[in-house]
Image (tube, rainbow, N blue to C red):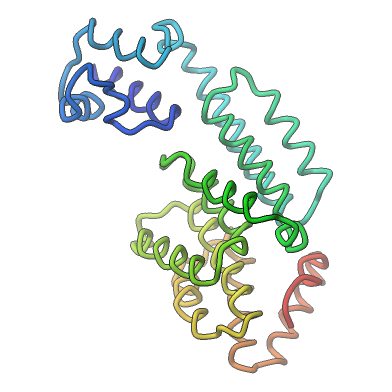
Length: 276
């Protein structure tokens, strides 16, 4: 019966529901919680009623698991490519990947959420686009970031926050940054993908603080970045962390050397946008 529990949890997360909303008054929340964890067996009638409450047929619930898994793997791969394209301001690649995302069928809630995130990043991946947003658009972005609370989307969510961190006030951004660092303070428990997302967020936040001469806000996130393992996947963001440390400490020669190395490595466009 643990299979049913796992499938119910997956369905709930894709629908963006809490356990209370998923149980829908059919069974108690505490009983439903134990069903998800495989501690309780759910009766057939209760199970079918819960599905009916959320307009999900048994056929769809027990659908093609392999197709669903393959689609999630494909979407995750496309989002990895998308993040790289957004970081390099490659508009053609960004548009091509969004087209590919839209072609993935069936379009589950997870896939829809990924498309929404991709579009948001596309419209906010540089400072000029962010500056053009009005107050209502900024509030809509803030709501979209937290419309689902699943571990599965956490990587994408943090990357999205990293791209649009400047729609927040500095006070809001600092509160958000500190909250995220507290949540992930146990570095040993993180996978490389999430570490990468966090490192991108830190670099963008520090850049913003430095440009506004809020140097005191840079130390904590830079220390966190420096404590991350020296994985090759984190090389670029850790180098950028060193760059900002050099700027803060007025080590201009060292900072200039880093810029030169990045240009030689093909990061010309990124260097153009870096504060000096």
